[in-house]
Each structure stands twice: as C-alpha cells, then as structure tokens.
Image 1 (cartoon, one colour):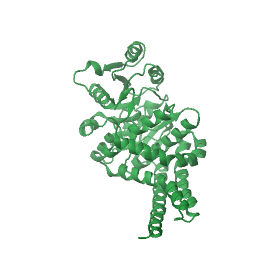
Image 2 (tube, rainbow, N blue to C red; image 1 turned 135 degrees about the vertical axis):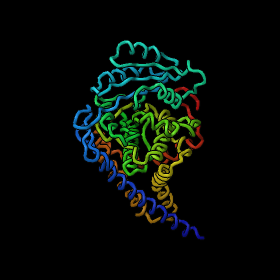
Image 3 (cartoon, rainbow, N blue to C red; image 1 turned 90 degrees about the vertical axis):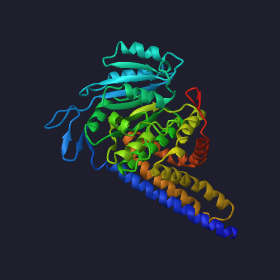
Image 4 (cartoon, rainbow, N blue to C red; image 1 turned 45 degrees about the horizontal axis):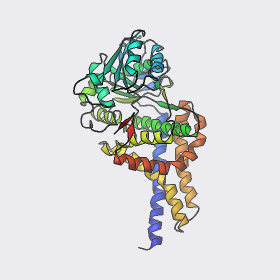
Length: 401
C-alpha cells in the first residue's frame, strides 16, 4: 500500500471519528436538557410519575423524606474540615435530620482533634472513626467509606469530601429525590473554584465530566460520577457487595459502585440537576498536583467492567487526537489543508454545543470562551494521563500508590 493510500485511509478515519463525536455530544446535550423520564425537579421538590413528593414530607399520601448519614473520609484535613462543618450547620431542616460520620484515614495532623471539638458544639450527631484504631482495616478511601457505611444509622448515606463546600439546601435537595422509592443511587453536580488559567481549564474539564455523567445517567448508560457528591441506599450498597471485586484499585469508590448498582437496579440511578445540590471544591494549585489527580482518576479505567465508560473513554481520546494527527498529516503533505480546520471545527462545535447548557447551570457561562484553548491542550494532556494511568503509580495525600 502506498503512503498516499495509507494517509487517505487515516484521513477517512479521522473525519469519521469527528463525526461520531459530534453525534455523541448532541445526544448528550439532548439528555442533559431533558431530565430522566421518571424525575422532574420542580422548585426544590420532585415530581415522579403523577404524584408530587414534597421535601418536608407533607402532602396527601406521601411519606416523610428519608434521613441521611453524611459520610466524610478525611486524611490530613484539619484546615478544611471546619469550613465544611460550618456549611453542614447551615443546612435547611430535613425530616428525620441527619448524622455526620467522619473517618480519619491515618491523618498526621490535627484532623481528629478538629472533629472531636466540633462534635461538642454542633447541633447534629458527629461521630469520629479512626482507621488506625480498627484492627485489620485497610487504608484509603474505599476502606473509609466501607467503615462508615457499616456504622451508619440512616437508610441513605450522603457522601462528600473534607475539602468541599456545600450550599444550605444540599441535604434537602437530595431528600426530595430520595423520597422516590425506586431511586437507589443519586449522583450530584460538582464545581471547581479558583482563579487563573489553570483553575479555569480544570473547571471547564470537570464541567464536561459532570455533564457527560448526568447525560449518560439520563440515557440509562451511566459512565461517571464524582465521589465528592453522591448518595445511595445502604441496602443497595449491600445488594451489590459494596466494593467487592475492585478492592485492589485505590480509586473508583464512586464509579465502580455506580456501574454495579445500575446493573442491579436498571431504573434506580438518577442525577440531581438542582442548583442547591452543587458542591464546590478548589482546583489543584499546580500542574504537578493536577497531573497526579488525573492519573489517579485514569488508573481505574482499565478495570471497568461496564462497556459504556470504556467506549466513551476511547472515543474522547481519539476525538482529541484528530487535530494533532491531522496537522501532522497536513505537514507531511498527506492531507488537504482545508480538512485540518474542518475536523477541528467539528470537534470544537461538539464541545461548545454540549457545554453551553452545562456551564449555564453551573453559573460559569464565561468559561465557554476557553473551550478552544482546552481543546488544543487536551490531546497531549489526555494521552499523558491515560498512559500514566495504565501504569497505575501515583502520589496522593502523601502516599505512594
């Protein structure tokens, strides 16, 4: 086969990938703009089928909203925990109330002391569990979550991270959706905060992940969620044997569980597209820390059992490679110059169309101007994190994993 024929074939593949990516993003845009067919959020309440469910449990024939155990895994979070606990103190009333369980994952700072002091002052129950004092307990977030779930008293567990901030209506928003007896797992939206170009690009990337996760849940082909903002029934956790089968993978305490619960309860997963459910956390301050975080996220991809997230990961990577590969072919004389910007424009159009409503929901419409910048930077970034993720080694929270 001549080099021209080989390049022409690759050209056709590149155009096809860009077209498939555009089609997929249009599907996701439609799914984002149209909530799950069984769930429509209306004014902080939930309309499910033909019956209204009120967050305070009032209304004819409706049961009270469930109580929650809020689970927080913490390692060296003495500086951040007071802010989160202050946010929890401001939560709007929820029928049944809630408890807070903080699991100290072998911290070397004053995390435990902060929790103990707060427990004496806060108006809701606060319990501290220390993995170092529990015989035979592993380290890491999965071990912390398992320990907390076993100790929880409420039928629902609601999870966030110690370095997050939650709005006053956070628990109430979850309670409204959790009142639907068919719901087993709820994924919530995340927002990255910070200033400067690095924080903006991180925030834009995470907004895309939030949107894709929400849309794929709406299509009943869930791909991703974020462990810093989600909830599930303890009975659902037990029904799928928790994290069994992927205990050895340090990351993935959120998405592996999402996929297992979706397989067990095909109509039981929802995304909480409600502004009062948006949890925020700070962007990574340096490029090095960002890469370690993304490598940690990428390290779980090869362990996915569900097909949907695997297919999506491959499509996104290939779509982001179309521009640099096309540019290389053009420079080598194997690709008409006008096809390079055309392929780039298809990819850019797909991202802009999809991200516009997501960013509007998150209150960050101005980030849309950064999409071309992220698109140019994303190919080497995604390739690097993907390959490093396959290797599996990274440093996180002072640990070599």
